[in-house]
Amino acid sequence: MLRFSLTENVTSQLLLGSVWPFFSFPTSFVFQLYCISACMFPNHHWGEWNDSQLQPTIQRLMKGYNRYLRPNFNEGPVEIGMSLDIASIDAISEINMDYTATIFLRQRWCDSRLVFPGNESVSVDGRLVSLLWIPDTFIPDSKRSFLHDVTVENRLIRIFSNGTVLYALRITATIACNMDLTKYPMDRQVCTLQLESWGYNVQDVVFYWTRGNDSVKGLDTLRLAQYSVERQYPKLVLHFALRRNVLFFILETYVPSILLVVLSWYILLYLTMLFLTMTTLMMGARTSLPNANCFIKAIDVYLGICFTFIFGALLEYACAHFYTMQHQTIEDLRRVSNTFAFKCVMKKLHVYDLLRELNETNGNGSIPIVSSTQPNQSAEVGSTAEQAASLFIVENPHNIDRHARTIFPTAFLFVNILYWLYYLFL
Image (cartoon, rainbow, N blue to C red; front, side):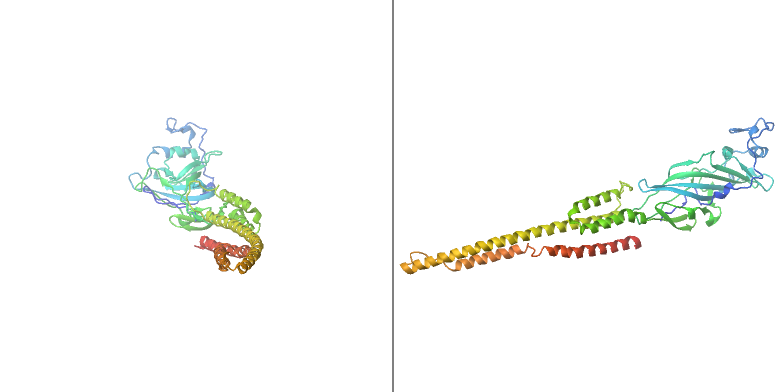
């Protein structure tokens, strides 16, 4: 959830509002700031302006006006109504941990020194701001910000007959946002937009909503590349939730990862290539994220799972190949040993026959006869060695591949179910 909130500061409170309508005021009483005649008040100067450049009504309002003193000085705080139109959120950077937004900000307050007869209002050139007291509002978390100035500075001042002043301007600011990327790319971010008074405290300036919960406009028209506006919370503090669009990451990262894992079960000869491709995919997924960030993100977990399954397929292939070669070697040894044993047995029988004939002929027992129990002892030793070796021998190596084709897909499906349930619903 991306939450933009205007929070209370030690110096002041802030509330937001809408701003587009300030460009559509009636023009029947718009006064020219530059006057052809220079005959009125020839001896007065107002900052960069002199009497020859000001309309008579403005001249009368500026007489005795001190722009260095706030309204209601020594009479209580001046109440400033705030309204905001979020024109666009131009960029949200996970690398720099900030977002860039273009904002139409409108501030309204009452200055009794600017009361004039009638029921109309006066729209004046924005450059006249140098003659008036205006709030020292600023964005504390801003990294960079600027006031738009094409073709002139984008600000407007309107003075109503009851002394109400409307000050509107268009600004673009890059604002810091501490992001939690643990569930990236299924994440919801919470960011804050604070507007505060630079030098006044709550005894001097108090901010409030101009039109209550309807003071914020523009959220319903926002179109972002990786986020969607979920909902708005119109409270004293403005909240609106932005959810990242995961479809882009599914097509770019998740689907290729799944395909690589599936291919590793069948294309055994290219496991090394798949292994390297998966490594490249893992590195590419981190290029748009901060390098110094120590979060273990959801996408890192999934790529790690796929990497593990591909590595497991590589180990399975190595084991199956090893036991297949071992089985072939053992079969060859058995064939050779069986032939050799047969020949030895035949030779031993022939020797025993000769010895027996010699014993019967001589009858003195001078030639020792080999005991018939020696072949049996040798057979027992051989059978024990074969039993010990059989513990490390797979009788049918093809069973490894047969079982792996069942175990790997089942385990991968089970892990996927757990993964998506956790990161989407927990």
